Amino acid sequence: MVTGASSGIGEEFARGLAQRGHALVLVARREELLEELARDLRDRFGTSVEVLGADLGTPQGVASVVARLSADGEGGLAPIDLLVNNAGRGEGGTFVEQDPVQMDAMLDLNVRAVLHLTRAVLPVQIARRAAGYERKLGVVNVSSMAGEILANPGGSVYGAGKKFVTVWSESVSAEVRKQGVHVTVVLPGFVRTDMTRGVQEQGMPEFAFVPKEHIVRDALRAWSSGRSVVIPGGQYKAADGLLKLLPRTLLRAVTRRMA
Ligand SMILES: NC(=O)c1ccc[n+]([C@@H]2O[C@H](COP(=O)([O-])OP(=O)(O)OC[C@H]3O[C@@H](n4cnc5c(N)ncnc54)[C@H](OP(=O)(O)O)[C@@H]3O)[C@@H](O)[C@H]2O)c1
Image (cartoon, rainbow, N blue to C red; front, side):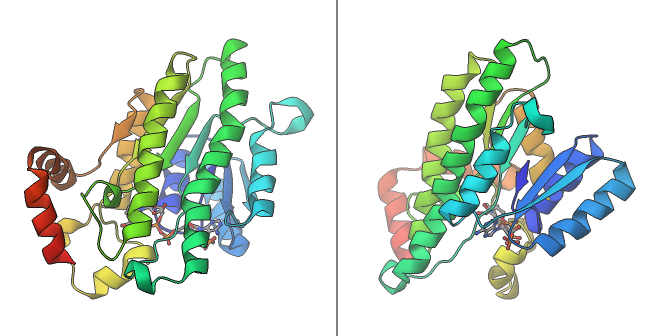
């Protein structure tokens, strides 16, 4: 299952997984785009594709996806081997200017939905593993490098939400590993998608962008090999190393200049 499969990184996950021969469940609000993608993937790869229209920013939308994730093979619905929690939104602006309603909506989607979908699928996967199922089982969470910088002026709520997902994901990964289920968190830097149209138009340099194909390739490789965290792109791996080495006082001074 891929959430947020109607565009960007999620669509690329769907293409990458179909190409590798996996049956799919595609989730997002824009069902017409999902149907179009499903037709294309069936034609190209001969794979089975279900479409599940849901607004993951609402309790009802989350409940409908939770119901699908709870399928354990009884009743005709195939259980989910891999959940990719990718759906997300990235509104920014200074904290005091941010619309509180929009802020809640972003956290509901980027954090709460991710927790609830994962909470639904992991028990089923653990039970299937205990019953002898041999193929790989687990979850890939799409977080962000935005949570790794010391502070994120102009993106405080988005960055902190993504940091939550990263830290929580690593903890859950450690908890379920011994039960033979893998949770991987992927931390993309900038990727050319609808979400980054603004920075693309502002002339962000080419080297800042990682192709979405690389995000998907690195995430699936990391998940397959049981790694709990992956940062795609040499430039972002280097930046992460630097962020860990530099003194916090210096990082704070840089952050103030950014603000
Ligand atoms: N692009 C980057 O530079 C970047 C960097 C780091 C992390 N990320 C993360 O990557 C993920 C994908 O983002 P993207 O860059 O590919 O952006 P995108 O092209 O805007 O895709 C966002 C996806 O999320 C879905 N979505 C949004 N709101 C939803 C809702 N309420 N319910 C269900 N689905 C919803 C959208 O589908 P519908 O509109 O059809 O619902 C769409 O498929 C996000 O979690 C984002 O935070 C992106």
